[in-house]
Image: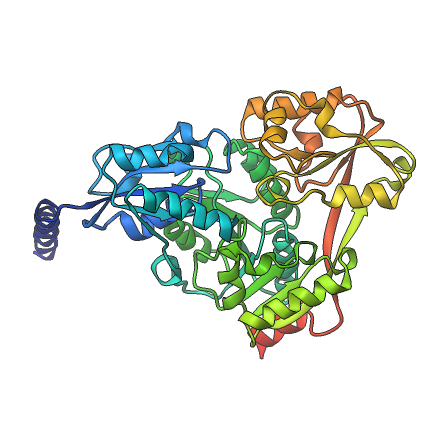
Amino acid sequence: MLGKKAKKAKIVKKELKKDVSEQIKADKVIIMGASGRDWHNFLMYFKNNPCLKVVAFTASQIPGIEKRVFPKELAGPYYTEDIPIYPEEKIIQLIKDLDVKHVYLCYSDLSFQEVMEKASEVLAAGANFSFLGTRATTIKTNIPLISITAVRTGAGKSQTSRKVGLILKELGYKVVAIRHPMPYGDLRTEVVQRFAKYDDLKKHQTTIEEREEYEPWIRIGIPVYAGVDYQKILERAEQEADIIIWDGGNNDFSFYKPDLSIVVADPLRAGHERSYYPGLINLINADVVVINKVDHAKRKDVRHVIQNIRKFNLRAKIIKANSIIKVENPDLVAGKSALLVEDGPTLTHGGMKFGAARIAALTFKAKIVNAKEFAVGSIKETFDKYPHLDMELPAMGYSKQQIKDLQDTINRAKCDIVLDGSPVNLKKLIKTNKPIIDVTYELEEIGKPDLKMLLRKHFQG
């Protein structure tokens, strides 16, 4: 009897939803994204909203992602067709052709100047320009969650996340990480992904950027989840953890409501903590701010970052930290000519001109060759798109062809060695005609309080 009542109630609810959708003429929406935050915001805010109809996504930052669709199977009851994805360059024409009323910006690591330029173009075309805030897009958890985010891409949030994970393991907790999304394939097969062993990387056909983030977690024995649907991901992760770490992407804010918010700032880009979207949101909400790379920064820049932290957040605890560079075989570096490979997103939309490989080369007096001279295919296109790049080679690998272009670029380079400052193990991905020497970096706090003290106090009193 109860089963029949439940079934009848479900039918009535479905009919009511249908009636509402027929009575309300939904406003047409475009979501500006980059294959991550955009999917999450759609599922959280638009999927079951009869008043707003997403007619298109636009894509930026990541090459090739606009050649897909957001599948109707994931889009919910108001969508009978796949939602197309277009290059962001077409947005003004799309607003006019599709009679779009609202445009929502749903991706990260944009300067305030860039944000307002995009807003001005959209407003001039006749549509409204909007954002979604933390209340509309964060999910509550049933177990403690620590969010680790940053004010810019490449500030050092991943090494901070892993340091926190190791500390929690040492304190006796079962830890699982959830990573900001990077679903660059068929979204229907990437709803929930779990990475606990190296075979999982092959199973899910991961790109180099994904490997850069997942491999280090696998290396320290902490499972990491990612995908498209972060409610379903949370439900899986909560089954095997005492504490969850949110490992943020770019300078985006957390998809989950954190019990403790740790934010990483970068004095090598002093001032960016208050001038990039949405990094300032992270800074304002931070419980702890880690100022990383102090050993490589000027004192005046560190002071500048502290002043900006205090302008927007008086309550956050501040921890200063060094980013300690370690070289696999330093004897093979000294005096040699070296091609430098760095983390891709940090150099491209992160805007950095150098990374760990450059520091290692300077430390051991290696002669740096100009990577740009040897670039081919999509790697050459990357250099053309980001003119601030020169000596360093970004570890781009969003497709098999791009990985091949990366390999060919390295093999064309006239040098003795390759210094690999990316988090991924390139030796497992490409075949080279010269030795690859790994450069790693670890977070080392300066003085007290340190992360261990803060975590012990927060969770154990």
